[in-house]
Image (cartoon, rainbow, N blue to C red):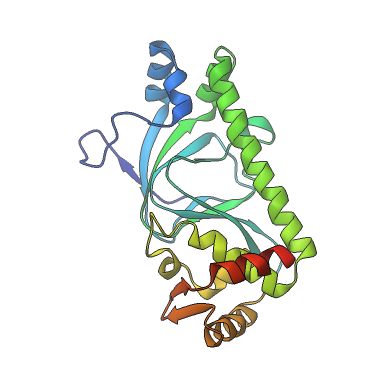
Length: 234
């Protein structure tokens, strides 16, 4: 069961419009369809936005907050695919392929999302090629990132994986200075596809070598060149 709080137009956090670029191509009639087919919701930190295998009747648009997209495996194992940031969509695969979510996602801070009924999206795609092209482009970009993640898991050693994970998460630090503090060491391990124990050991090694600086949960990358080289060599 997905847990969230519905935001009404009387709430101070209510969004009067959706600012995603693809929605700017809609006609007045199509925008009205979106408005009547959407629900604004707020998820708290730790709430699931989507659940792998659950029926998907809507697409989610992230307006505020951050979440982790991940796939679930056996024995409570999971692998983190990406961080979902404002302006991105969740559940596009349910439009173009299956009727279920093929991954889970969880909020790592309080999130404000807009849920749009999938039927409305499909109806507009059938009449508005520019809008459809925008969604296809976003869906393709996500797939490209998934292939890059697959290459990392298949061909890189543990230290190369942790270097890539650190660089990826650090890329969010300009807009979210607290990003590392929002993630546990297990979250970091699930981005690298290794055990939590291995992550803790490697972080301590990198800290001793002045490659990173550990300050509680926060991580500061001191030698980006070294980490980038480590990530490339794997």
